[in-house]
Image (cartoon, rainbow, N blue to C red; front, side, top):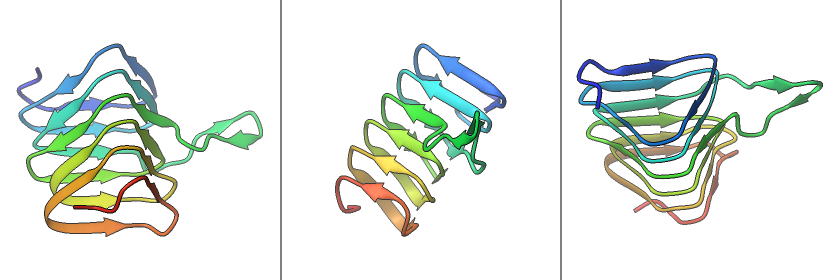
Length: 118
């Protein structure tokens, strides 16, 4: 668990979860084989090219995303649930689990959700 926050950029693979009492900020491309939990969680905003094709989801989370405050995610595949006070689901995002929010939810038209936000 990181007490001062986590910032990842470039190409990253994490074999477990990411936990912080502060902000988690992930850019580049990443595969996380576990849950992500922080005060705020921000993942992605850029598209990644692989050869001539753009990767549909350069971010993969095989777990849940939990944030005490804000969750903002783009270009990501989430196998689990997404929970936060304020949740923003950006373009080219695919969520297999449920989405829970307290105060606000914003979902891009190009996002794919398995369940309606609760």
